[in-house]
Image (cartoon, rainbow, N blue to C red; front, side, top):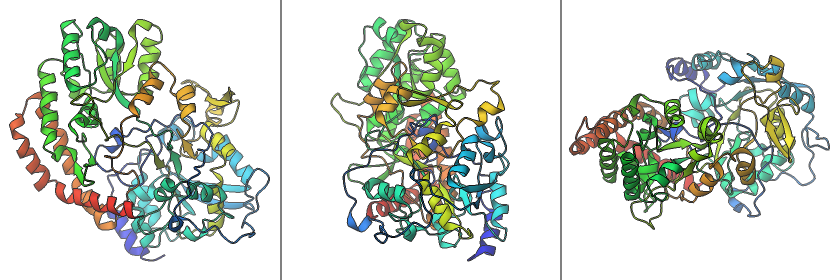
Amino acid sequence: MKSKKVISLLLMTALTASLLAGCGGSGDSGNAESSASEKEESSQAPEESGSGEAPEESSEEAPGESEVDGGSAGGEAKYPRDENGYPDLGGETISIWFAMTTENAGAVSTDMGDYEAVKALEEKFNVNFEFIHPPVGQESENFNIMMSDEKLPDMIFCQGIDKFYPGGVEMAYADGVLYDYTNDINAVDTPNFYNMINSDPYLMKAVTDDEGRIVRLGAKICGSEEADLNFIGPLIRSDYLAAANMEVPKTIDDWTAMLQAMKDNGVEYPLALDKSQLIYTSNIFAGAYGVSGNSYFLKEDGSVAFGPYEDAYKDFLTQMHEWYEAGFINPDFASQDTDSIMSMAAGDRIGSTLIHLYTYGVTYFVTTEGDDPDKVMVAAPMPVLNEGDTRNLRSSSRSLGDYKYITADAENKDACIALLDALYLEDIDLMMANGIEGVGYTMEDGAPVQAALSADASKEVRLGSCPQQWHAYEDTDLNYILTKKYNKGCQDEALELWKTEGTSGSISNFIMYNTEESETRSTYNSDVSTAVEEWVMKFITGQEPIDKFDEFREILKNEGHIEELIAIEQSAMDRYDAR
């Protein structure tokens, strides 16, 4: 393998502090975080259950220059398929480096091959899996050791490359670590993936890197054009709203009036937040001022900017400080987490909060609202400064996750390609998203309903449930989401309301960075994140006067090299636009 010894030395000294927390859930983008807050800020729903339904194919044709070669007409597939579309992989053994999530490793098994759905996959495709699992919490070290071996496994799953390889996926290809299968994507050998990306120009750009390579075969497809949603937003106690004789607020001034009225009526904390909500999901309020809370965004002229570095961010901080001083915000927000907020909500101590709808559904709705209709939460639109203003800073939930790479050392590359393509079959996705029917899920009204796993569920039952990081689609069917998955309390109404905000001001989830850019981001991103977190907290609580905002910006510029980082985001976005 090209440059293998040099790479090994680099790997053994780099990224030792990284931890792999799994790769599903929040709908991972194809690049490292656009800001230190991206994971917390992501609007992708937690990895819960898949609908088992592939997204409908778009009738729009992809541009000719972006189409993947369809292969020779009438050619035979390298691996024959049966009437179900299952490839017969001839009993091949495929080795996979697979970093298990805590859900998989701790409570269930230390071997992904123990899952009944994985065993069924082996039988259906006539293939054997040999898993290499790093110990949970030691993924980086294990990855480095693996890279120093003479021969790599056939495949590396779930962002091992993206998380731990210096320079990321782009450098891994340049160094000859990964196999470039671009020319193997065709209508004969990869019919499911080929038809999907060639019928959707958006996906075609998403699965292609800046060098024109197809790099996302086997990746989970999150969201769709129809189901492009925002799962985080403001919820308000309707009874406290009615007691204050207020309507659902639309503007920042409306919010101030509502919070004051609640305070006057004895509500302990009219707006309850934790630190992550102020620092990381603050697009909700900062967006009213035309800036992102703690991330890069696109201005109206298309140029990239960083929210906390913009003049308007000072106005946002000023408003948050005023609310804090007025006693509208819980004073201990810096040390409280979401569980604390939900506990206060159940105790009738808060009037409103910013929350992920999944968290609302499994906590407040289950413990409080579901039993007491007088304590209903209602969704509020994303606030604006002036009624009639529009917002375009919503992060798109269309993303990719659970990346799967074929190494250059793989001896059965064609089998790996056929396997990854077959994961997009509808019935295979249903199984990998939900487990074995009758154990992991049941079908109700034509849709899968996952079995609730109690704390004392047997190992047999758990191994019949869904194996994490395998299924191909997540939250792609809007009707399924609204009627089956997010149908508790105000969940469906909130999703419909919040998705009205535009996304033209958000950075694409699919930008990628070259080696030099990755190194620069790795060097300075933590400095920027630390500075933003420390200063924003001080500004809001009054530990530092807002007059020091320019001093804060100078720290971002001189110590965080924020202008260099902004330039990197601009270059990456320009390359994405040019794909």
